Image (cartoon, rainbow, N blue to C red; front, side, top):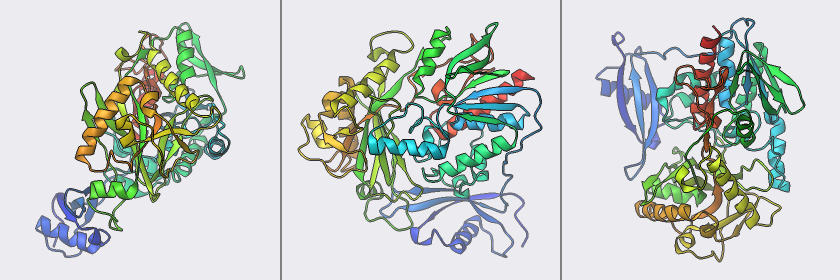
Length: 516
């Protein structure tokens, strides 16, 4: 029998017992397509997700019949010309911008305030062991950006902003599993990302780009109003034909230096709340309807949202089989985040449970009002403890709902430790009200979500940047400062690894158009 004239896509529901059986999947796909198996027809899984609506969760597959794999993007650097661009920040926005510039023959000079990914890990460990926060090298700052130690989720709803397949292909080219091209919610794990980040760095340098670590940018260099470089803390000046600002959502000093230079900024809504932690087997029961889960099933995860009387409440950065981690970027503050390893086999699951924060919620009408509010909440959480370590205030969910202290707290994945505290009083009142109402709504939908087995740890506050750096829709440049290209999460145009990477690609393409 000949190959079909065109690709046929069929959808299959596959029991966990059969998901590892390629012959079973092939036979089922051909039968669904109405074809006999003569050994010549190509069958390929192009999408894989979990359908947990039935009593026993099943895998939902989309299978392409009659076509080989399509073209795969690879990194193709070109010979460098005389043009060069300064790229500030070595997170996904900065690294994918640098890769794209090299493919256009433009030399990127990349500046990162933190250390390389290997040295950065030592600084992260000091947060656990000594409570010491290096303001330039931590969970948010350093090679790879905040996503390197935050599970490595590679899914995004911002698919209209760029080619997500291109981003995933490049991750695979630098060593990621090809499964990320197929899984509906791909992730890499914080034990895998450092290796991929090193691979990107080596490719950038081998192709003629420059990367400088511990290069803290303290000022913007302008020539007749055009951005032409930056100044570093040591006094050095680094110049280029354009400046891409991809500094991430926690680089508060960058907003300060832009204001000093008279660069227009805007306040942007963000979200604030807690990390909610459950035993993973409870999450499996809630969303797979039984526990223990089948060995072929991944740890159950969720993405939840509800509308309260005042504002939206939603889960953020859910980490199945993961850990709550300290994400502070300066001494005297307490910030939490989540991460998980590639296997996602740890006994706890955690997620941000956060409420919207709007400009109208806080006093002041300047661009940094929400940023100051965010910082004040983080400092309040730190002062509530011993004022020396990163121990986190915590409260059982049912006690939070009732407004009472927890008399005892269960085990936690948070290594610095937790202590019983009135989290409902430490959070801003409007956040507490929204979280209480949201928890009650979600608890009715998912039995156990708001039970005594759920622990709330405070505070989750770095969901996104509370500041936006404006840019023109067509040129991607700041409307007041030609040559300045705001990029990624810190500029207010992305929310996660893939969307930041796509924004880096789009901004680099805009730089290429501008320099031509």
